[in-house]
Image (tube, rainbow, N blue to C red; front, side, top):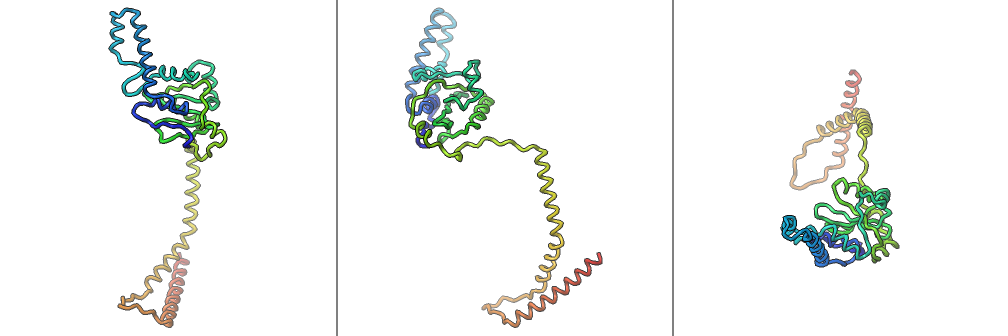
Length: 281
């Protein structure tokens, strides 16, 4: 997936990574976003000054840190929204009453992109070609999502208290979009959706069936196992103990034949006695 532009996490510059992954190119730097953030700070300061520069509210405002940008590289949703407006793009909260948000909730795979935020971390999800990709900068690379998993993924993010925004408007053309439209990735690259856990009753029935089969196999094998053990013991008891010799010599053929005949006679005799004993039980 080298054709897809993906920035890995550096410091706290996730907002920059999020925007560039969404737009599929190095369009914004931290300086660009900081400039927008400081401009918002100046506008807010000017509005607060209208009530009087000597007011307590204005003095408290001056003491508070910026809500738009900080030294770590974090930027607010206002900064991100303003940056996207340059491209004619708009952010709409996923859970808002906006009719476009209602349509997106019904069928998210028909949208073009989403931006997600939680605890100062931003990342984007975008459709490239006809496939969806999680472009989170903390991942080692883009993550391919099926249409089904996209819906589940967004639902899970909401459960985890993420803020989700729908990106509305025409995204800029990019090489990845063209390539993947002609040659989509194989389904084997998809992230697997969680499978439904089996019901307890279903598990119990399968366990019972497995146990019944095991008992049946054990019962059928009892007689054969007993006979095998008796033969094995007979073989072990009838084998002569051979002292180790400095030089191994092959035994004579006549000795081997005599030993085999003796062993066979012994086994037949013991098996006959075993059968008689079993019959009396």
